[in-house]
Image (cartoon, rainbow, N blue to C red):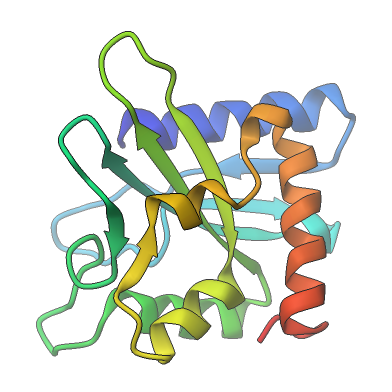
Length: 167
């Protein structure tokens, strides 16, 4: 498990506990011989917190200008893109999907995490776009304002952009 994923799970669980929300975030152990559809799952009876979160991290210090669908996501041995697997899982599970992007800015500088609604990600992918620029990523809610607040903002964006069914 990456430090980013571990930190996100801890941040979510702390926020849920402090806000008395009945929700729990967890990471499914990854193995060489089993596929992992998403990085973090949140279980809750509250649909706002019933989530599937994919985590991606890019280093601005090393010159990253964007999060690319071809470079930062995988394609399995049958040629199926990771986002296609995620779309199927999210559709079948009923979870709300979120792409969490960590922007690493270098040693001694604060990392930023932005949350992008799933419907925005999949629509962009389906359109043939190459990904999201750093500037676009920074325009999405940051967990710096509190992760529950960022989740609420993502939910509102999802409703406005994609409708109630999220697509």
